[in-house]
Amino acid sequence: MGKTVRAIMRMQATIGDYPVPTSEAAYLTHSNLIDTATPYGGTLQADGTWAQAPCLDRPFARALPSWARQAGQQYAPFLDPGHGTDGSAIRAVLDDTALQQKAAEGAIALALARFDAPWDGMLYDALGAALGDASYHDKQHDFMGRLSDAAHRAGLAFAVAFRGIRPEDESWSSVKLDRIVGVADIFDYYFYAWWLAPCSTGPYWWNRAGLDNALEHGIRPESIYLGIGNYARYWSAGYKTSQDMTHDQAMQIASASGAAVNWVEDHPTGLIREKYAAVNDGHLWIQDGDTVKPRLALVDEYGLGGVMLFIAGMGAESVWDAIAEWKTPATPDVPEVRASNPTDFFLEVPIGAGELA
Image 1: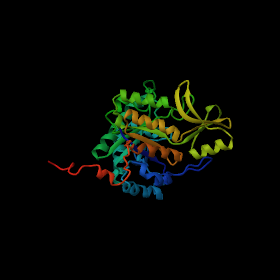
Image 2 (image 1 turned 90 degrees about the vertical axis):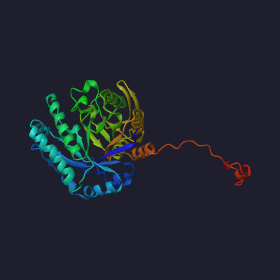
Image 3 (image 1 turned 180 degrees about the vertical axis):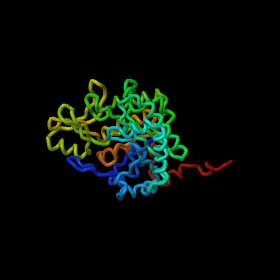
Image 4 (image 1 turned 45 degrees about the horizontal axis):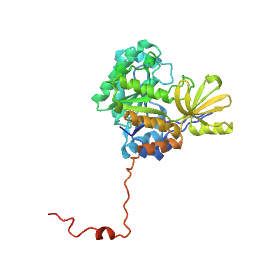
């Protein structure tokens, strides 16, 4: 059973109605609770190269590698196959085995020669692969195999992040569990299921269903890291559009609208164990320390390797409090023995009673 915390780092702040900061402040405050720092590593391009974002030239990105090493943490950036895009880049690479190999070799070049080299490992974000077409599944697994082989030849750990799935979900998932059992060293399971009623971030019943399915496929529990959604999500009326935001922003919106934030335990679909507020004809689903604790208990129950925090810097301070409590070894109850007088212990032991024969 592990108590390891792998944490995704947001390297660039965003602006707009719901601005999100970088993970820098959260990292510096809670570095003692983080075992692996996972910043941005690169975005796959249609020619098999990995584009580097401007955020890598900023002070946080430049300082993080040395901070992580000083803290004794693993440093394992994530490789984005096109998250938030139309999927044309990953499709172009998957359609050409030569480009797959070029991308795999390019990833290792980053790990061994980029400004933050050497990496300890890398995380392939299979969540970001827009692969609604099932015909790409085999190609996707071939590509992950090439990445894994290249990483292992270079002495790097290889991790895959993907959504937790049940047997009935495998037709649309970007990975097939029976194909990746021997590919990755680490499986970062991001258990969100926002498309299922009641559209919470990651219902508890889904967490369990995904874990059970993974174990049935032969994935070792100690290699699984349960994803924790460390943020809030606002849905418009009718659950038509959604927006991720920080915990503090969500609480401010709830307070301004006079909405109560309530614990949701059960639903016709199963156990939820998240927090909810009805605001402005819309819906807020909120994560905090209370919602994280049942997920941490699942890690212990299933004997998992630990958790993957998505994303450091967006959640409530109570999430870190829950993690700190979870990581702190339990102190056994030892009866305290007191003497009425400091010399009583010695006066009650006969002289010579402790001597060796």
